Length: 408
Image (cartoon, rainbow, N blue to C red):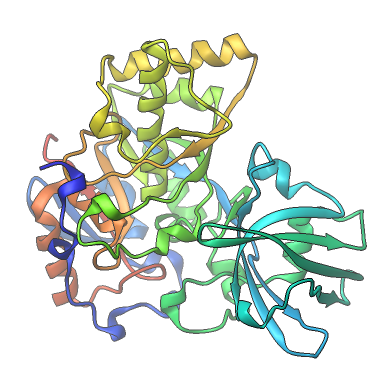
């Protein structure tokens, strides 16, 4: 069956609200870890994850950094309107460029209470700590979002700094609570580096300096990629079949050096820490496959569309695909591959790079659950049933799993 024909009702399970982790545990690495390997389940904790991974492994982490994407503006009449910053307008070549804008920027946003925002009305947000006023006006409406012109009267500040001072931590909507002071630290990985996500790559939240030291001591290699997580990660599949669902596109950023490390590690186990890292890695194959076939990828647009892995012909090995990307980057004189991917990984997908996945437990009928099903097959139900029956905590602040493909 092609993924377009998949019925989302087949990926439903009952998740009681009390099983959703509303807050993180006091210690990051105390979260439980459920290991799936060759059809068998065992239990551990993240504190001991290094014991579960062979030495000849490359672990790939997502180093994106969550920005304060929620802004609360005031209308001239005194009422409040919430703005959720999704992604920069298409005029910017990448998120980093947009984040470094000073004085003004155009951004795609969700608007709470948009009906109360009258045409021509300018909203304001005054920040006394950093001494600036942020203004917002609607300039366009794109599918699913508004395009806002955001301006601030301190041109020494970048937009990243404006968000830091004026915004709030964008907790997932299913937590049903306002951000607390502790979320500033805990809804961020220890290795977060590149501003741009509106949701955390949650598998990475469990890793502490001690865990990373244990991984290094075991001679497990590590590499870092960037995928800026969009709000579409929470978008439910509302169509009966996947053919009616449009996958969200997200920015990825992978250095030349990292692509070389991945290419040199193809004979090892490659473990993606998080579905975001996995989508980044698997996207690299399809970008390289284009190049091998003489098609220059649209780096400024979407280089991997959601159905490409199922409709395009894979004509090269993974090593050849990565080599083609490196040759392309050499020819262009670029040190980082920065583009967007819309890749949808669902049952029927053939994995090209990754054979191990560290991931949290995901919402019913979500594209993330489809990815897990693609990775371990129908046994996803065995994993989730066990987690539900044995007190595991679900979703962003919950426990997690280490899943190995059955080929191991």
